[in-house]
Length: 398
Image (cartoon, rainbow, N blue to C red):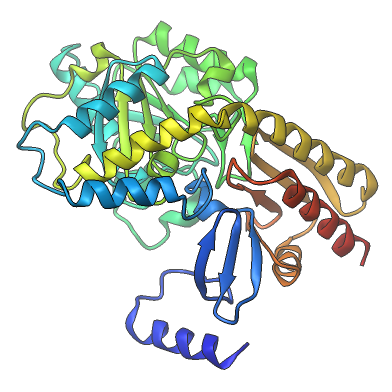
């Protein structure tokens, strides 16, 4: 490590809480699909800030909108009507085929809002004392007390008890278990259709359809967490569109504003009726700069056809990862994913492979110990994706 990096690392450790296992690099610049470290070395970014910078880094159009809006209106709070906020809500709900939106600042906040909406909807609209939220094993829904309780991974809950009541986790891909778990106390089922932190695990169409059918039969809300999979990541604007589902509530964040902090709860008109003035709020959510940028993100996605690009480039990249599995069956178990959320599953712990890829100049991450996860910007050149495959081939051969 260079003196520059060691100095920055020491400064960081002296003033910031030790909550991240940080990469052994400091980033000074990010442009397009490239990151530059303190010593001027360039890396191909296959993580996009964890599915955030879907358009790539430092887009000049985004910078222009930010600067122009900052000179006009930054923040006045949600006590006032704001044109930027309404214009974005109109466009986002149109893309999603849903009725109303609530804007916040993060994915965890979006899931918190959805949980509150489900509980209040049941009690005020359905007139039922139903409050339980059913989630799936392997899921990840956030780091607040409620959302980590909803998360189907015991490791994130350690040392944080007592946890809030009202959450039930059932096995993945088991319709009978889900059906049995829903009682007269159930308000909603909250699912990721592709579990990202859970190891890039796509839900089967049969199971997804069964989940929706059970929700309808039991008259509970179907809530889909699209925080990592939304905004074109899977080759459809939303992952639920692959499955032909009609969720009542959808949560979003990450890719909404291409790096600025934004979350959203988007619901049908019926489900949204669960909220009323004073029932839920946020100080910063949906401010002028954020929503102006988010609207520009949708414009760029449309103009550059990034949703379809994610589909075609994802098919190409996943196909090449499948080739690696065939080539190295002693080391690799499978390649899986949809669009540009892809996972390469190793038979043994894969931290070494992540480190080797970083040494070769490719930024990605390892989840669930054995899965290399790829979340490149949707605008990433195919040459960069192919170069990553060749780098993987080299380290597997070695």
